[in-house]
Image (cartoon, rainbow, N blue to C red; front, side):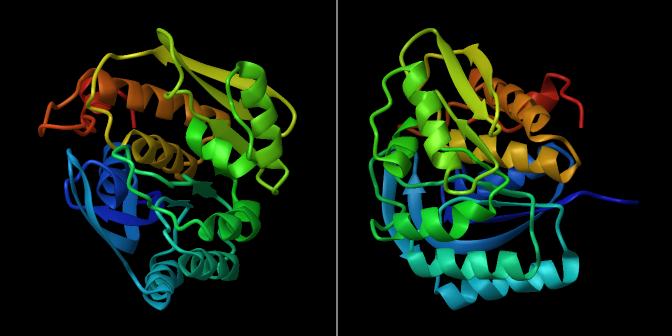
Length: 268
């Protein structure tokens, strides 16, 4: 039996809604064998992040290396990286093992406002890691940090995508979940053309881990051989179902429903 394999390099969410927990759930739901390298332990629940405890860069590097040297993977995603040291360690190891299918979710700030990326680490992200990416998946606030520009319109989003691509990224997907309106609109720029993925906006507070889940779904599909465009389509469908069929867990921003896509008859 041949199985697609993926690696997530990200932080742990004790509440189970985001981070490696969301990534591994998504990999499993989409029929991909998931491996992980932990970058930080966070103490969090639906009410917010109550503590961030980063892992030493050396330990992150070793986790990545032992997975890649033995198990091997078809795609890799990064989430919360926290520090420049972790970013550099991850980038060095991914280059060493020639990991070309890299999906970067540039996690910076938690929904409750807690910082998940040190300020000085953003430059390392842009200069060291982004040039290795097959695709990067920022939301609007993250795209604004990466570009230094305000994004207020569709034209702004396209300009931001071009600026992010200039760092050496092959594909840029800017998520539109932070925009106003009845529709969500994600923009994919492949270096030549723009593609739009739209969905119905859901009035819910249970959106914790949506970015992690979306990028993990893209990673899983790419691991199975899908194109970036096809992976984005599946990821949009996966996260739309996960939000619409929410679990309503906790008193704050609850998690999405990682079972929803399969329960609706989504195909592996």
